[in-house]
Picture 1 (cartoon, one colour):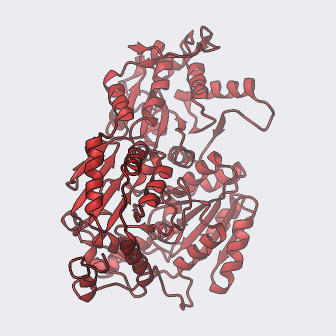
Picture 2: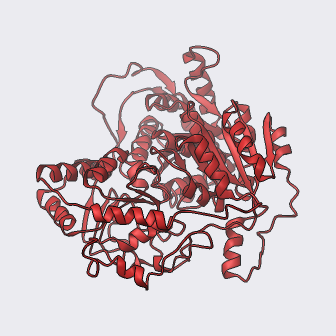
Picture 3: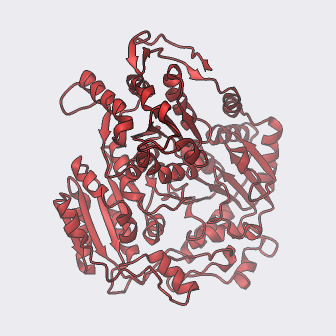
Length: 618
């Protein structure tokens, strides 16, 4: 069943089109300007429709209104769409054929679901009459994707094709964003009918939930309860996640934090929600968070979670997470996240920005005032006493130093993407993010190979931004074919490869927990020459740095280069990521390593942060 949309009459309503042409027209109506994908037999009618759409709407030879970006493989297309979505805030779109083309997108679809990234994947399918016969390049995409995506559609009624594509975009961007898959048999693409120009599929229950979320308003009573807890607090702390960025609520978060002088810790996915150079920012918390962020979590007495989900990399030992917090509040758009991991005292299901705005308005109108100055001073003391650090005197190139120099060159204004592993954590720890949507990484799934295609998608979304993929030699191998995609489209994407000749994070765990049995993680005998590979893919800037003294000049040339650039830095292959909270451990067991000052929480310093023994501080 279909429902009609109220609004203007579409200028093409009543026009005779093929199903493929309808797909492309809906994409245009939805504002899609870039499609990522790889063609094949079952999706060829739609690829042809894209070609003809561009022919008919092109203003000049070099400017297709709907760019078609062809990757090395379909997984790359999915991550490009994800990078596009994360950097722009729009829905990313990718278009692939049936069978292996569609199954190659399972990982990016699951990755987008785990990190709440809005994308629409349109897959070709064998004709409906051949489905279930093990036809050439047939795969049961609805069954495969059902547990990975936010929603999956199989189009079997051609008159519903147009509304199905439109509904897919609605679902992808609404509520908690996520990936939607539309499986379109070839005969549905070849069908000919009249374009309606409006209409959505009937999904009454979903839309009722979305309407409820959009209209969710904090009652006067709940606002009073929140500020009663804040009034009783001496050490409040905002704990913010990717939901703040996905919900475009960074502005409201910053205003709320600054108005009430409340420090902020961010999850890996929440970096950039608060300007990391702000005095109130404590950067990242969690397994590899800053020591001072984790100590602030240990010390706070009121934890305010916004768009965060208490995942295992943040709250590995749930019972000991924020142990001194007398109250915990939680704002999230997904009701399933409330109380799923950590029991809270106050909760609200709704949009982060709207909720923070309502609390801010109530606080101002009720004349709320509370001096958190002593707590702010304590936070500054934590930053001074436990700063991020590493072996700065080593003759070997330390990866932390590389990222520090890059951050200095870009000023926290570049889009940074990463693969997964040690380089990902060093980038998160040592890069600044002045604004939201500058940090692109695979958080929940931890997908190696994410960084390069995500950077490509981000560069298409933000052509005027500096985009840098900080990658590792293990991760970049996963989607190395996309190196050529960068040069094919002459994108000024910068690839910074931190090469430690192995899977560094795996080796770190093997050193700590597996008696230094480096099973499958040592790649010192691998013969890949990344510089030759880059040059063969058309990179005119391709350099390797092996000496510390050459690094600063090389990085400057790398960042300043006008075009695709590849810089490989041979780093200390024994460099580790610290701080580290081991699996299943609490923050009190955090290991800070040799170069970051830790504190003994059972000793005198723990007493110094206790409000009962130090009333003059709190």
